[in-house]
Image 1 (cartoon, each protein chain N blue to C red):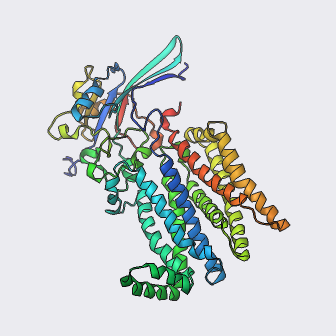
Image 2: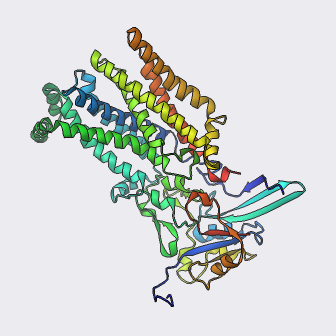
Length: 323
Length: 187
């Protein structure tokens, strides 16, 4: 007997839930993008200092941790805009809920600020520290000087903590989506590492927009290429996992392999956002060509598109849409 | 109390929906809206009509759906503020003043049973626990003209719910979600 579903008449029409879930929009896309970018900046800035054993030569890289915190604050503002009960946001900090990735994220975001400030202290020159100190109220300048002296004495632990907080920030944004099996297109453990890799490449791309020391630019471009390569591998594995999984996973794969988001995902995210920049970086390196802004701009656009598409695809994939 | 161990049995509230009796009148939807002052345009429960097969060999299933008050509720696990919590009898509730409206619970729910209340917090079916605690039944169960809905303690072998689940074929929606729902559809 044919039991194929012919028609469903669904009597629910709840705002933001029907006909498909649309609870998280541009505010969350921008937060995920900025959060990933900031995570990348922290990992790269700390990583560069760990590698070279000294503060950065480029002013942009020395000020990068503080600008990252500014970008993170902007991202958190967008996050706050998304809340439906915004003046109850303090509730995030009334407890730590072990099973809630969002609770993890709320506390990780708190950790990132002091980690970023200490990373900035290890990066800035005496003169630049003076500029910052000059802007502080007189009562705080003594404490700032003590903190700076402590940062000089504790460089390595600070750099490792900053890198760790960047990794945690980059991972949690993907894990927050990836641990929701109800959203079929997010149901992959690879989403966490993918967002971290994407954050690292967008963070590198952001830094590469500015004037940098030649040696540091070369290092960033190498790390950017590695992050892009990792991202491509993780995307391939994620799509493969969906395509070879059970029905809910295959539904998710369908959105990217022939379905609604196929064209924009593969053209904007994969080709324009990853393959083309990777190819251009390889050509620039081999032929010693002058650096072009096209590469970081493509990476940034691809990173934003990745988050936009995945956020939309996840909300449009639900168990009730399965036959 | 268990007669063997003397241990106090924990209540596990569950609801059965008899798909052979439901006519899709939506009285349950209206009763819920009236009892719980659900705002216009929103509903805590709803009716789904599924038609399967190929004409003339068609079959129809009518289901009154709502929050499944899952035993492994992903909404509770994902709530960052503790607003979503498990209450008496395993009923999943939302404490309004703790809810930040982040909507993680809405995203986490396999049954899309939650919605954003105009006052900013997330809302859903509460099994009318305010009536149950006084010995009553949920509003939808009370109003149903065909006795489609049965509510009770699934851990009590003498309850109507337990009796139905023991004697009838039943299913839950999307068992693959891993949420272990407590809304059973009698077939």
